Image (cartoon, rainbow, N blue to C red; front, top):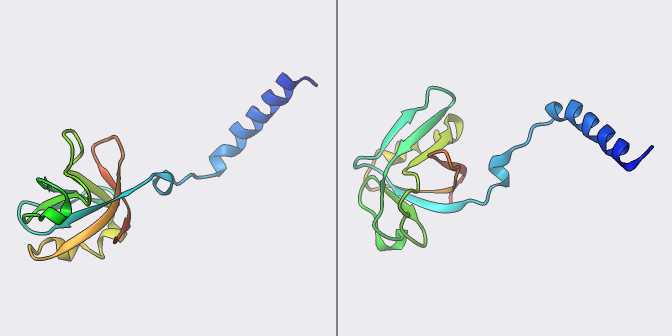
Amino acid sequence: MTVNANFARFVAVFAVLSPMFTFNTANAQTSYPMTCRGGGTLSIQNDGGNGVRINFQAGRGAAPQGLSPGQCTWSDRALRSGEPTTICDRASSAAQYVSRLVQSDEYSIFQVYNDGRGCMRVTRVGP
């Protein structure tokens, strides 16, 4: 059997078996801390599925420079033009922080990554 035949056999076996495995790409992504201050114009919506969408205003600078109610920003810089101002998360995870986001004196930190489809995806809640 030639190398090409072995490779073809491998590809065929992989194609048959791969649907049996799931890959969690959220955990494979590098995520970064984003701080949000509750209240203001921040809005929390059910996404129609099993998650929530949190729409916020971009802070003017890095988190240590301060946030107004309803703003979120990176810990080390302001959001760049074109970066999403929506955080997307699973409803089960969001249950631990949603009540704080309606209060303008509360802050939450999320580990997120830009999914390239308009959302900052949450991988973990907390610093």
